[in-house]
Length: 139
Ligand SMILES: [Fe+2]
Image (cartoon, rainbow, N blue to C red; front, side):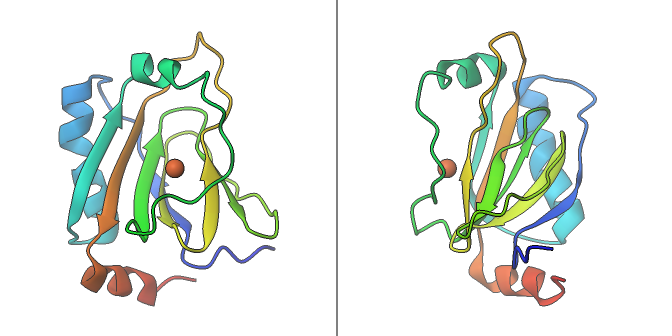
């Protein structure tokens, strides 16, 4: 089995309501419940319309800007694909909330059929002090 280091599925979230305001409010709380206390500089929520606009963009495996050492992502369907630099793909299912070590793994938006309503949310980067705390118990 591949070792994904600090990158791991924290839990799974199925929102009661699919509305941008609801997800903006609830996603940070879901992350807080899964990780304990944390601070993040940014919250991104993309509703299906915004996700569809990205379809044309070529999605290659990449790491984000190095200033984001880590982030937590979620999508209701078609989870963001995560792989090790040696090529092993991580198993992630719909609704999984995933802690990503941006320095260890690559990620990309999957190919999503236009008729699918994909919601995406992300908090980043996690505050460094607590980052170490999270990773202390990582398997
Ligand atoms: Fe990215």
